[in-house]
Length: 370
Image (cartoon, rainbow, N blue to C red; front, side, top):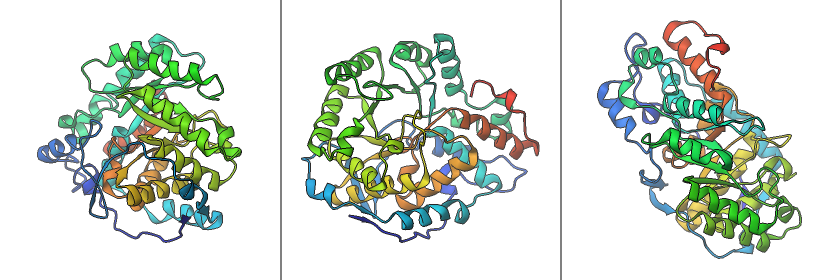
């Protein structure tokens, strides 16, 4: 399956993303629009997913089709040209930009994966996930009825119980990185048991790491069996398969690994651990998103996407949302199918919204938790 070079030219439909715009002197959203926005898929699996008018089912495991894997072809120069147009050809301003940034917050996995993490840091992060914007911004934007929060909080296994307790009653899921994160090189039985322990501790999402060597060696059956074993260990928890795209060397490897992970039953495919030298990029994302689209066309099933690592600014958030809107359509702008792995990005989004409201940028030091 070749990654083609066509450019979708659908008009940006910002009102469908996060409420309606209007006169910049008035609140961003009406009360009715806020209620409508707030019910659009904040919880996983609550939004009907369609592609080209076809209703899609959630992804389930299918037999490994090596023909699909082997026929993956990627025109690297064409992908890079297409990716280079995303930020240049897509722009949203004023109320529209504010609405898109609110949607970005709702699709964010607020993350802390540092060696010096502590229970207190995780608790503060959970408080920020519950209330990602300061009260004066919420009031100025007129979005009190949104009850806006992030898509999830992502932590190491050791802090799953802490995060679950801190988020109780909020509806915000806890995601745990697992399977020997970030290298994914511990014995398979240990990685499977780690997943089970995180689920028992209360994690409802698991971010697993594949063995990159399976990709380098073309060991597609081994990769499929590994991801399938991880999915079985997840049980009812949603599984995001981290491909470690910065380590995979070629876009063709990225495309092939994406297909195997999806056929093995992944609910999401994710770019990076955030620990590689190169993390999420638009060219890599384009290849993965096109794989999701073609997989949906062939199987009738939907898979989510999570770019992670290196996404730090509001402008980058808008670029990735434009990519998802162009390539997969409106349903992939919901937390059920799109997440950012980020932390510092929230501070920049807050600063942009502060500027929208007051005409001034706030100091970064005003947003230390993000």
